[in-house]
Image 1 (cartoon, rainbow, N blue to C red):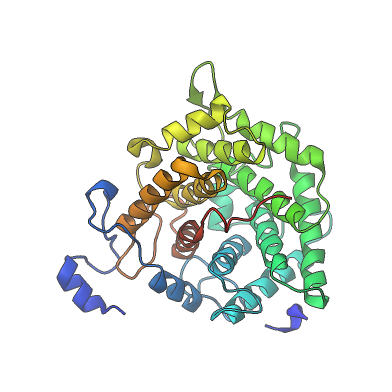
Image 2 (cartoon, rainbow, N blue to C red):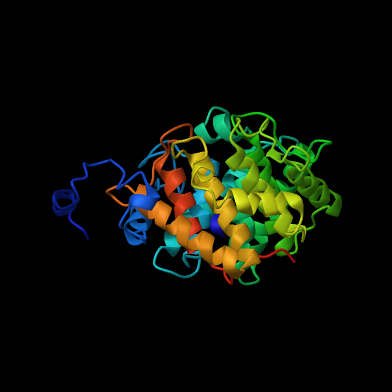
Length: 350
C-alpha cells in the first residue's frame, strides 16, 4: 500500500552574467536575452528539497505543508514522474503518501486537512491544502493501474471532494479568507474537475455555481475586473475568469475576451508589481486555459510566459516570491507546471 511506502558551475555563471547568488537572472522580460528557462536545475532542486516524510515546506527541508507538497507533486506528475515511472518516481510516491495521510488524519466533518498557520493558508485561504490535495490526487490517480494503490488514492480523493463541496458558499465561491482568496476558489474548482475527470462523483450544481462565480469576476458594464477577493490585483481575478470561461465553453464571453486582452499587457501581467507566489500560480492557471483553447492566443502567450519565467529565474534555477508567498518550493513548483503545459498534455474534464 502507498501508506506503507514511503551543471552549471555557480562561480562560472556568476562571472559570465554578473549575477549574485540568490538574485534573479533578470527583472524585465522584454529586456532579457534568455528566451527559454532552465528546467533541469529547478526540478533537481525541488526533489532535493523534499523532506524524508515526503512533504515540502517553503525551503529545503522546511516544515512541510499539504498545499506546497501537493503543488510540488503536480509538478512532478506533469513532468512525467508518476508514482510508478520516471526518474523521480520515489519522490512522487512519497509526496502522494504524505498527502493521503494528511487527508486520512483529518476529522470527517472538518473541511481542513492541514493545521492552521502556514504561508499558503495566510495568503490563499485556510482551505488551500484541501483544494490542491484534490487536484494532486486526481492527477496521480490517472497514472495508477487498477488495484489497491488506486483505490487508496480514490478514497482520499472522495474525502477531499466532500470537504470541498461542504466549503462552497451560496455565491459559488469556496473561500473569502486569506490575502487573495479568489485563487483559492480557482484551485477548489480545479480539484473538483480533477476528481470528476477520474470518475469520482462531483455534484454538477457545485461546478456550475463555481464557474458562475468566477465569470462574475469581470463587470462588462464598467469593463473592470472585480478585485475584492484578489487583494486589489486584477491579474489574479483574470486568471480565474479565463479558466472558468474555458471549462464552461464561454471563451467568447466578454469576461473571457477581456481576460485574454488584459493578459497581453505587460503591466497587467506584472500583477502586484513584483513576482510573488500569487503571480506564479496566476501564470499557471492562465497557461492551462490558453493551452486548452489552443490556437494563436496559446502560441503568443506561451512564448511570452516562457520568456518571462526565463528572465526572473534565479541563479540556482529556482523561482522565489518577492512578496506574500515567498516560498521557493511553492514558486518553483508552480513555474515548472507552467513550463510543462502543452495543449495536448493538460488534463481535461470529462
